[in-house]
Image (tube, rainbow, N blue to C red; front, side, top):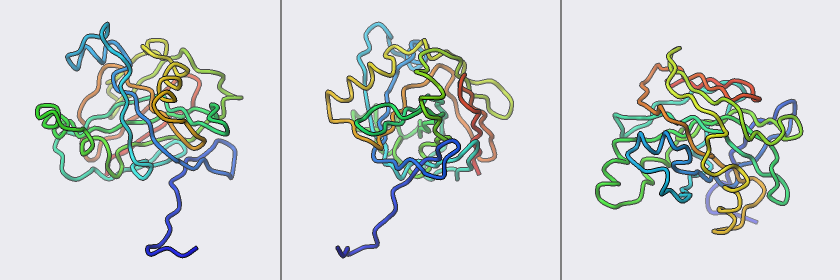
Length: 220
């Protein structure tokens, strides 16, 4: 088959101890899945139903244990959000887990919220997501509990536990599949604990989730 523009290669994630990579089909994200984060954003965790948004696969910057990302255009207030990332394999079963940062152009998001508009420009952009290598579930187990944290230049910003998720991984998958069929190659950002904040060019973010290798992200 011929195409009128060059055919691109799908973005892919590294897989631990494997030369094969994990191709990204779609990026699903859960908004507000930790009570403390909901409160810091002015919401009530007792009234929250799962809310979802998407990012383009090409928004993802992939690394093994570190990655460098260019500070994006059109924002003066870029925020970090560390998250557990779930990678789905054949038959939409969990293939493995990684660490991710969901970046948000908070200034653009605030304007969108004020005007009742979609968040797309604040969430879906080149470098808008960083994802570590994927560790197969056979090695990690289900990862329903465990410390999650992010520090910036050695200063702790975010701390929580996976057990604090309002909706766990299986519940998130059930909700998402109710809206649209989950397929192999999908990845899911599962929400972030409290402590989100701004980062600048030159900052180094150190991400940790118990049971997974550490992940470092630099803004250049």
